[in-house]
Amino acid sequence: MRATAETVAIKLERTIPASPGKVFDAWLDPSIPGTPWHGNEKLIVDPTVDGLWYWLSLGSTPHYGRFLDMERPGLIRISWMSPNTLGLESTVTVTFEQDGEGTLLTLVHSGLPNDEMARAHEKGWGAISERFSDIFAGGSRRSA
Image 1 (cartoon, helix red, strand yellow):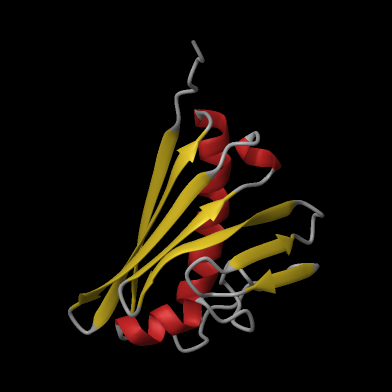
Image 2 (tube, one colour):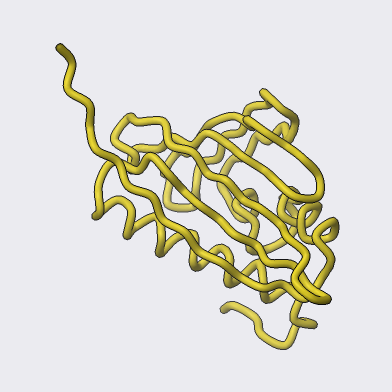
C-alpha cells in the first residue's frame, strides 16, 4: 500500500483595469513585467495545449511543466514542478472573468506539498501578480 501525501492550495485574486482578452494575452507575453515568463535567466515557453514551458529563475531555480488547458480569454491551466514542490507535480489555474469594466484574475495553485511550500508560493505569486497588475495602472507604480 502506497502512502499519499496531503497537499494544499493557495488562491489569490486581482482586479485588472482591462478586458479579459487583453489580460489573457498579456499573461502569456514574456516581454511583459509581472508575467511568470518575464525576467528569467533561461526561458522556453510554448503556450499551446500540451506545449512545454521551462524557466531558470534569476536565482537559478528551475521551474517546468506543460500547458494543460487554454481557453481564451477565460482560462489558462498549467502543470508546475520545481525543487520547491518536492518532486510533486502541482497545478496552476488562472481564470480571467469580466468584472465591471475590468477583469478579475484568479490564480489557484493546487497540489503543493505542505503549508510551508504553499506560503512560499503564495508570496511568489503575490509579487508576480502585483507587478502584473501594475502594468495596467498606467505606469504610475514601478518596481525597483
